Image (tube, rainbow, N blue to C red; front, side, top):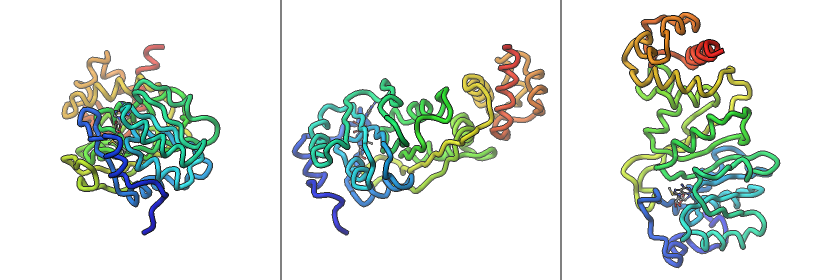
Length: 281
Ligand code: SAM
């Protein structure tokens, strides 16, 4: 298979720029450019799309995103050691790679996305992956600024994202993501694909925003799922007590008080969140 560009192999880049992987930054690099190209393509064609990439590291996925035709890639990286390596890629693709040095948890990404379709595609650092996802999906404004998320998670987190009622992995993350998005696992990636290999299998997850999810306030949905799944094996009449008159809320939502969180579909949680909002007035 021919290389995706004429830049040096990633192992050389890592050596020249002293990018020995740091555990504290969740650095497990992908050096196989066929695999990074597959991730880049997993959310559909990139022509005309601005991609926000969190954690480009030495740039394997960044290179694939550019080679696959992204209009622009905005790459947010916390590790200052990686910036010079990324600048080499930027000079190979003039005007198409913007490098932002900083902590992705503290950066307002919407402002970086520009006009036209924007997509998040990233091999995320696992230590901040879930808060980043929650931030993207629980944003007040909907439809959101992104038209898709294609992101790598530990397999166990991926299963929670796509879980349905009755699944062991069904919980707060599954309700939030299922409420606002169509979520699916695109493919698994074995530990051996990374340098260094992590302990667990990873999965690339695809999330597409639903144009018109059932209306309810995000904060109330989060409050009811937190209460319900905080005691997931208890009946709702018990687990929702912290929210006030649980029986009245359940009756307003049309749910049997003897049911448990793990059996309730997204629509049920939305009805509960609406009942909480209505009581607040
Ligand atoms: N995308 C590269 C690849 O696939 O080889 C690197 C992926 S590595 C799993 C995660 C990357 O995220 C590292 O480059 C790390 O320095 C960066 N990172 C860690 N925490 C970050 C944060 N809070 N904000 C931005 N980047 C972060």
